[in-house]
Amino acid sequence: MNGQSRTLGENEGISILYCHGWGSHFDPSKNKIRALSKMRPVDGITVDYTLHPHLVFERFAAQLKRHPEALVVGTSLGGFFAAWLGAEFDRPFIAINPSITPSTTLQAYVGRGVNHVGVPYELMEDCVMAYDALSFRLDGRGTIVLDMGDEILDAQATLDFIKGRLPIVAFEGGSHRFDHMAELIESRPDLFNAY
Image 1 (cartoon, rainbow, N blue to C red):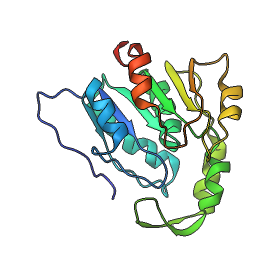
Image 2 (tube, one colour; image 1 turned 30 degrees about the horizontal axis):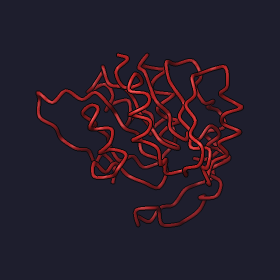
Image 3 (spheres, one colour; image 1 turned 45 degrees about the vertical axis):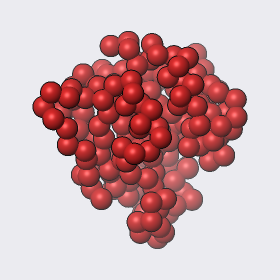
């Protein structure tokens, strides 16, 4: 699972680095990735979120260093890392339905389980609590995108936390999976062309 990535030709020029969410993986055939790839070439890796957050950050950072001009796009826990990567590397980012308090939201997954793609995992309490020392980064050049119908994360709490600190695009309804990628691309192409 670690390090799974899509290999691209030298001339393809990656413009978007995609950070998947908890319990998922990087899959170029997913609707969100396919929609994004109509805008710009997309790359990503599958990370193991049961690792310490600094190790996860380093894995994403190594991929971003391969594509230093990329826009960083992440969903859910990947949105947390997109904001962190954007701030650290001065890259524009889009955080979609981001987890702003992973030490709280990941509590539901502590222990053994099977993730959303059928892979067994064991998430330790100390890994989850390591997020306590990290804050959602608000010092980067990013945009927060929300589906207000998110059934996993409290979109209103995210909106209240972010409001006035970073630009926000919010869609009524939708879900945690984010159901408005096509509408986002159509209504806000500037988010993908601003660099």
